Image (cartoon, rainbow, N blue to C red; front, side):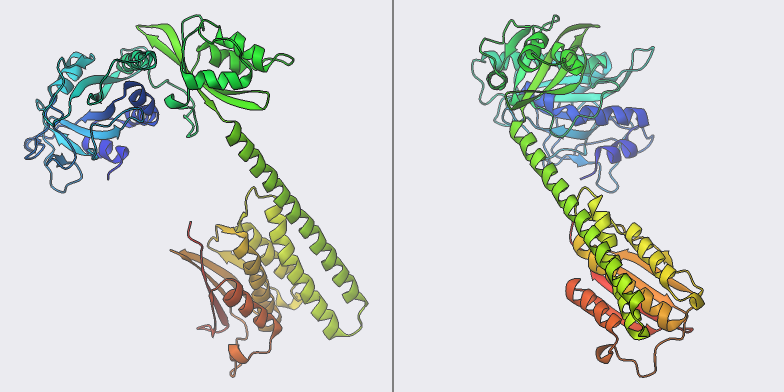
Length: 527
């Protein structure tokens, strides 16, 4: 299915600022759908293209008031190749279903095209720049559906704004009954929000992006008047305040002062609280009392140029925050463990280095120095993990340090500085540690035995595998070299790490033009 951005760019004359406004609207219009108990469809005017023919919805033409335009009903799709767009008409670029009531559209209709005149309410809302409501429900599909259309306006400094499209609001009336106080409050709030959309006051300009875990309508809702007093409290909202310590009723109380008294009786009041609880600005905050944490989100209601009140969405996030704190504590503990392991490994390396200096036998000194390098490569990984918030590390940094360490401890006569080409990216620690050790061994072997003038580590990620090639232009491999029968401790370590721990493939071959080429192919975990 094409995205909103794809449809806007390909089929409309809307610009980048218009698209940003529509993204902001769509990111938060679940609120309008839930308050309305209705499906929402966002229609944008098609780009006029002279001579392209008439835009049709196919054999199952959708009608403005009939609610017949359903995905799969034969309507034309914008993503169908060769579909004529016409010099006028509408394209559905976004869709939202309510979580508070039954849906009208069981299939997706994003991408559906209708010609001008096929949906009269959309045309009327666009031409007359006003909200349009149909008098009688439509029964053409066997289910009563009430249709409304809302023009979408983008606020612009010093002007009336720019109209971008029309929202079709379709309400399934099959379960209609006498509305409760909650439902009446929802519907009145939805009416106010719809008017704000038509006036270019919703979404709010410059508002921070709505978080995925922001409160929703069903979590708890308060309706405030202009003075910040509660005129309605949903049962869930009242329960959240009961857990904060409230023993009286919420209705009639000034929300800011009440919340401050419950949560900040003996400490300075959070400034954001008073702004959110009064409904003066579109912001979010959290309050805590008696171990209960409640999230509040304010939505000012501004209709006709004046603030008439506000909605405050409320969610009890106590359990969520408790789990987040547990994860933070766990992460901190893991990082501390990595830090201590790194310190211990550095101590071991220092002891081995000290012992090597005391040895008179060159072979023994060389063996201990190799052990120091191996331990050091592991310590580098643990040091990086001790500073990472998760068990993933930027392996480019580790590789560069391993490469630099190999160059520093190589024999002076080697006169070569290893280089890295390509990027490893972020790797899990289960791959990072053995890969760092394998790189250390390969680089050290090349510098000690190959005596190259050039030494490179070439990295490429292809799909689900990581490919690493370590090549040099040194003396090359012995004529009778065989990896399976090699007695080199370093190569045995590399083979064990690559094939055993990393479940990868290892190949060592003569390089064309001289030198040696070692290829590692390592499977990456699926994300």
